[in-house]
Image 1 (cartoon, helix red, strand yellow):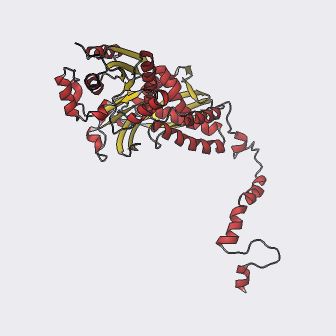
Image 2 (tube, protein in one colour; image 1 turned 135 degrees about the horizontal axis):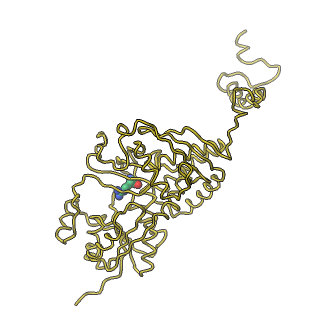
Image 3 (cartoon, protein in one colour; image 1 turned 90 degrees about the horizontal axis):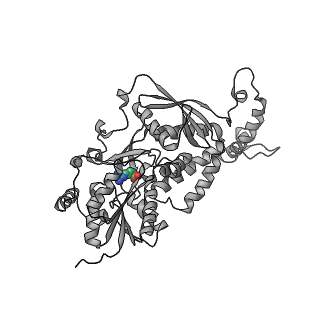
Length: 419
Ligand code: ARG
């Protein structure tokens, strides 16, 4: 007699070894019907093959969803407007993808009447936090199962388990790196990279040419922005996804976008992370350059603080929070005049801003010039500086140099001492 399953679980399925093993493991250990969901935010190659594979491995149902545009429009673009860069280095590709995957997982679980969701993250990384916290926020009724956090198998034991259960093990399993990718970036960890002293070998890179092998001739690209978002390349209007994909190719062939980061994980571990993010680096740099032209220095200073808060929040899995939405309201408002064009020179690993223009530019030639046509009245400066510097003058007299504060008719201590 076939035993009745104890409910359904929706598993985020990538087609890789761990989540393939998880299908069998969940069915055996939790006695649940496993429904798989393959979310393509841009890194998945054979979506249909992956869907079929899950059914072969015992999933009762198998779904796939193309979430590439949603990922760019609703996640990546918010990070662009915010200038989000974790610890000043990492454009947050993986961290931005997880909340979207969790959201789609929860939606499907509710649609299918499942009582649990599952994902393949281990217990050491940030991704488990992002999945779990997003599910807590969106589907607090759902149980969360993370097989790889529970099963306690080493890499070799997982392979053994797979072989024992006739789960295909990819031929390239001895590939020494762990990789995650979507259009906003590609991350490479493990293997010899775990020694932070080892220079990353060329074979970790797939999107970028070595700067040494990049063309000798510089390549220029003009990026058009509207209200903080990139909308064109070299004058040609483009949607977000194709624009980013195109720029990944252009910047990548010029050796731009390699990042070697000693990263602080939320769970307390320092990890050595390598990334390739050609489009992200060029877009973020260009966006900052346009903000420098269209925002006042007060806005720029404040926004820099918001950028750090926003980056930490994404990294730490708090995407579905009111705090993020509140910050978005500020960030969106700050982008009203961030429109214009940035000209970028790409050459052998360098990405340099060489031109900028905007209909809302705060730059005034007549104020800035040292040539004829100068409208800035230099005599205004002297009085301004006296008042600007007044606190320092008073402090010097009262505390530092020791003069008596400005009192008319009385001699200062120093004057007295001189006698
Ligand atoms: N360290 C990065 C982050 O925490 C990248 C993680 C990549 N994830 C992975 N499962 N390979 O966002």
